[in-house]
Structures are given as C-alpha cells and as structure tokens.
Image (spheres, rainbow, N blue to C red):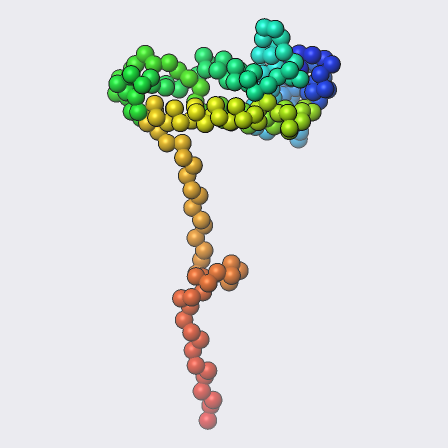
Length: 201
C-alpha cells in the first residue's frame, strides 16, 4: 500500500510502487519462508506502520498527501490510535490514580502506552526518510510531536504510578590482571615480583 495519496508526490516513488497491502503481505509471507532476503521483525513492523499511516491519510477528510502532512497531522494520528490502546490510564479523580497495581477494575479509559507511541514515531520517522522524505521536513521529527510524547510519558507515569526513567547500564566488570584494558584498577592489586633465585654454589 503506497503511503502517498497523491501519485505526483515526490515521496511516492520510493515506497511500494502503488502496490496493494495484500501484495505486500504476500511478499512478506514468501520472504518468511526461509529466503535470504526476509525482512527483520523491525522492518516488517515498520512496513505495517507505514501502510497504516498511509491508510489514515487517504481516509482523512479531505484526503492528504505526504507533501501536505505536518506535525499536527501526526498528532491527530497518534490520538486516533488511542481507541485501540490496551493500557489503563487512570483519571486524576480515580481512586487508583498513581497506583501501579490497582486492586479492582475501574472505568478509566484504555490508551496507547507511551513506549508504544515512542517506538511507532521512531519507525515512521525512519520510513519517511527511506521513502524520499527530507529530514528537514520530516513531520514525525516535529517539535510538537516530541512535546506530545513527553507529555504522554509524564502523564502516564503519574497516572499509573510507574517510572519511565531509563535504567543505567551496568559496566562489565573487568577481570583482575586484564592488561588489555589498560585500567589502573585492574593491576593495582598484583603482588610484586619475587626476588631472583640465588646462584648455585
């Protein structure tokens, strides 16, 4: 499924050549049969996201081409996806607001999780440029989109009582005596060399 609703768009030539979503699905199925050029899971998901956004643009009233797409349209798309979300986001008036493990159900709405939206925007940003879009005009990299994702992250962290802070990676421990690292700490505890053996009589 070609992302551009306008065949004259400068971005329409780098996509799928106007093919249908069924042809893409079948090609992915063939590729998954063990051929060397089978797409990775990331690439396959990126293709599906690309097609979904293209369908959204075509169903927009009025229909939009990629050349007309802006950060505001990306925000509309992200909010549209909330209806398919599976993450409970508690309202401020909910007694379970900020509770990471609510003991009972509540009527609060389901939303797309921040992590899912953040990964989606990253894939679509890459797909836009892979299909001929300019990084300078990439609507998925717009400041409004970045601010929206930040607001969603902060709101969901408060509402769900969870933290989205990135965990610091633990540095691999170096073996004592590993001279290849050039680390002072790896060699400071080595015993001094013993005295030379006494000469025989």
